[in-house]
Length: 27
Image 1 (spheres, rainbow, N blue to C red):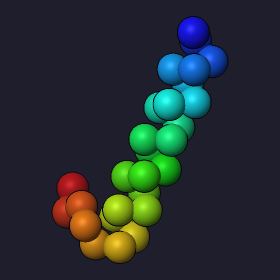
Image 2 (tube, helix red, strand yellow):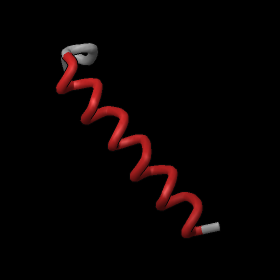
Image 3 (cartoon, rainbow, N blue to C red):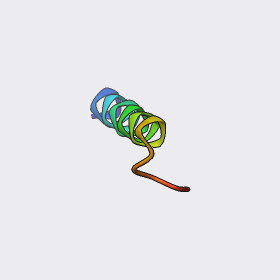
């Protein structure tokens, strides 16, 4: 369960980073 949570968190961070690069997120 811990590994799944860690992988999910990393995936979310990746999506946020991509969003920032594309200018979708301003924060």
